[in-house]
Length: 265
Image (tube, rainbow, N blue to C red):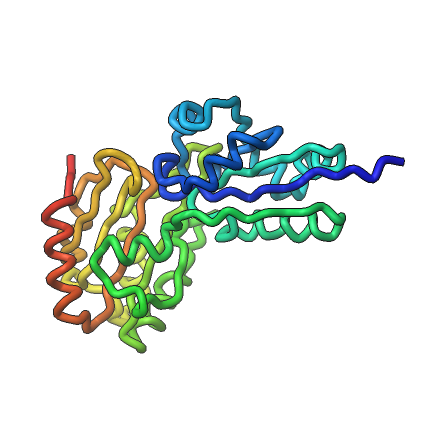
């Protein structure tokens, strides 16, 4: 029985393939096979292929989650060096951590190539201080009539410590689902109307970010009532709810960045 096993590389692509590290590019050019996660966030496959100069295979959610990465693990056990290229940082999503743990359990060597992630980049590119980032949450669409209020609770919790709240928005590349900031605000304000706790008002400062890492990216800071009316087309999108009492330097930085990158259609 052969004892030869391959090696697993979890490679972060950063905000876009153009933000890949030299190490990430080196790994992707030398492994035997490259799989790309295209469902947790947007990735320009054509751009990635041009930069790497090799064929890429998108991997389905079912193969990583329901089948626990079986297609990749089978190749690793046959001796192949396989890379899973992931938008952002490869270990932000629990699914990728699970793959790493399973590879380790089977005695398969693994390597991690970090990438620039939306957290904390959404804060820093908003002009906000990274040490004031609070708990992160994801805003999702109502399911079967159920409105998920957890992000509202997270904002309320972070507010109590004067921390900023970074909100990721529901995205599923396979299903063509990409929530916009406008939709996220509508959902959050629906929760506010139901709860009436005054966590969110039209005067609340927020930052909308879209298409970070790609040409034409958008960063718009302002009052929630104004941001909710913007038409922002780029994806993926992120919403940052600014702490109740931001530092004066943060306010100046937000204004400077927004004046430079607030592009709306």
